Image 1 (tube, one colour):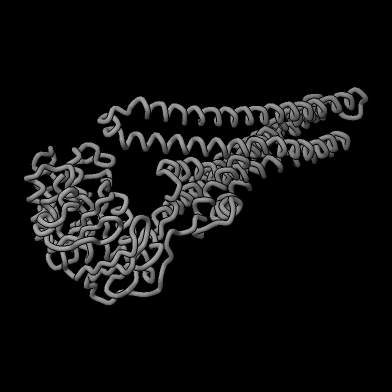
Image 2: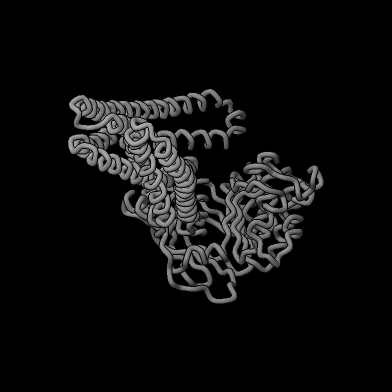
Length: 564
């Protein structure tokens, strides 16, 4: 599947195309099952006319054996066909989910813009499931049409009038069912949008639960979620009403068609045009029609919901990348010289800065928003509005974002941990040949492990919530150090640890990063004291630079930022 789709139709088409073998097998076996189901009433009519009314035991045994063989075929075709259809649906769902995750994790970014993580998770789960279900709905719908056609053919052989009732009534019923599915499609899309938003809000609140409790914001958060949840509930109820109305109307129309077949068949039998067995067959076939017509109604609903979900998936897949991939390459080996030329982005204004290879640079930013602007430019999460960021003389605009990630690591302050062990988190991005122990020692994770029940093999749980804030921060720092990138940018890596531990970590960072470019964006005196020099950013520009001790002595703004 390609990385972008113009519409939801493309998503549906590729979802089915990718599983066409299984879909075709399911449709073929389902058709055989429906043909067998339609033949059962006809065979019962034959038994009545050729065996029961004539009291022919031999014929009765023969036709009962034929019925038994048909039932065996029905059972096998249903089981294998259903298995193939379900497998096609699950495989398509999985393929869509992988494609969505690949797009979300694309180094060029873009999908997270204006979307909460919970909304993306909902699209990758619920919407992918609904689109995948189309691979089951299509063969079932095809098989239902084959069943209806078989029923019409049998009735035509019995009576042209009965056959025409089915052949003319079924298209009308399908057309009305399609019209009735339109409101469902619209309301299903709204339902998924509201559900995804509610899921995103819930995930956001759970993530910040400790902070909410700390500031006493539980009631505000609850009110916010309650309002969002009620919107989602209203959308769900509207979609449910649309689905119930569609199902009810289709069922009523189906009943009218069945009643018409039974009425016409009864009149023909009363006139002697058809036999008793043929009348029984006609009534049985009319009752049989309930099944395929209900399937078609269900297929209409599934396709309506699938189209709505496919449109949401297509919107994510077609999201324009935040940055484009350049064709240039870095000189090898990477020295780690970073240069900012007239960098303008957000609150940064014409920022000029040279970072020497192997330098341990401290950056103090008086406005936290400006720190964020600097970090996203250094990691090329976006391109600056003006100016450039260069690495070893090559502009980041000219490099592939994936290549940048391989040499530049921006470790943000609020980095999450993965579900797994402490050691597994530390080694998540480390080269295979790199031992994690030095990084764990430098970040203070060794001391953390000694207090845990299973040491470095202790499970940390989702997002590391089983650890304290300081423990999580040290593990995240160790992970960044173990990655061993030529350029490492750390944003406030020690805000949740005590001063003694912070001083020990500062010394550890300096030691383990010796000879490689490291940028510490922080206001921590302990970290700044071990840097080679510090740059002060105020008002979006460099206002002073020098050793930490000198800046403390001569810059009032600097003192306010780091000693307050």
